[in-house]
Length: 317
Image (cartoon, one colour):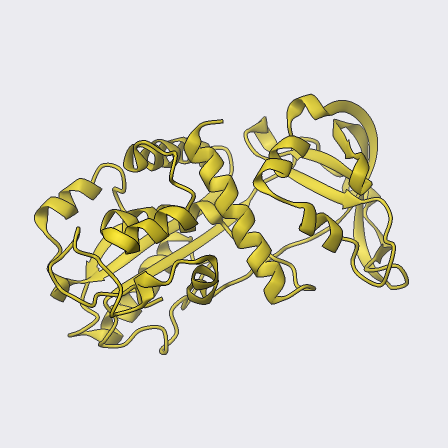
């Protein structure tokens, strides 16, 4: 695994833990690659302490060429879209009044070919908001409407980061429709709720984390290019969901260790999995600030001088 993959994994774990802190019971779904790509573009616009903070939060200290790295990752992901419905929107909207330098704009065209977009927040606030919403809806095949509400932008907005993603695919080994039945799903040690449960007995990669008593199952999607990893506590010891102990032990290092192919083996497994669909939306500003990325939101501290000469430029949201 190269330095950028390690960096993205670390950033993903950091984001996951912060989202878990915010709501310990809600389902969490997010696309860290979308966020890190947009932030990497913003990082290219910064200098000084602002750049240092972003580099630290994104774990880019060991990445020698950030632009080339994200260019490669984006190209690799784009190749996969022929195998399943995957749409990832990564946009950094910059107000035209900031007059980004030609050198900066040109430097983004190859590594971030569609991420940077110049708009008119200052002069045409509502029209710009509606145009962005229409564009994002089209880019996600109409799955995501009105991502920006009326409070999301104003004539004071200078830089706006927007990420959106949706993913639909089929399992490589399909769960038979005839086997779907209503079954109890354990929420904690004492509570259950009825769910539509899928069932399949087949051979999958299976691992086990002995110290946490956690089973790890890999469910490959069609064509094996992407898999879902399920980390399942075998026992729930108290009134929690059983995930808290696992989440506490989760780090970039432990995640890579637990899911290393050498730690898993092909095993015949009887899998019971609830039918599910998850969605979520998050305000990244408080999350990023809690991770240590504060200067980009602070007029007196931000430094976007790699992009423009205007002082006090901030990432609005």
